[in-house]
Image (cartoon, rainbow, N blue to C red; front, side):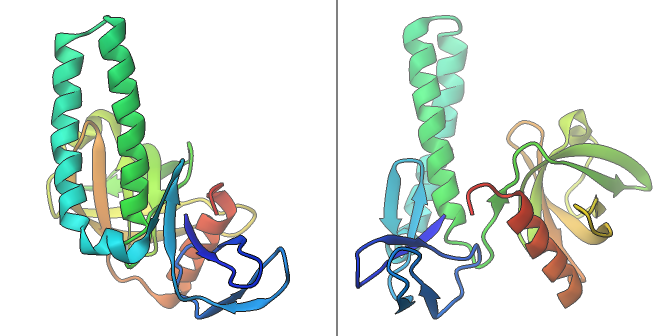
Length: 208
């Protein structure tokens, strides 16, 4: 979640999910305020966005090492409470860290809960869970189908509208891994489709 601090009343003001605004209104004091310093928050953590951007490579390296450590702890301490508590804590921390790094993207990825999505690969249609979504791409939990997908596969995602007409968007599979997850980059993203994606995010992302 992106935030800025009101210079008049010191309240934290939530920014639109893309964060690309020059001014906004403080809901507490009603002042029209400039957006200068943007912070990224996740769980109990709050960091200045520019600091995250400057040290992005360090945090990405930390995530990779921590994920390896978690897998090792799961193998060595399966069913042992001390290990289970440690794994759960590290997993929660990594989840918050990944959410904060998402806030540094040019186009932020937003979690959409348990929303399902239909997608087509090699003329076959499947159903998965939409882990997160932005106007430029998505992450899908596609179950065992992930073993059949290849990098740079053409993929088409089909979104059902919430009270509006559904729409589809074409993409490419950019990465596969981390269990059953698949990363998709959208192609041929027209302005009208981008607006539909933005509307879908605003309607379904409880963090906005």
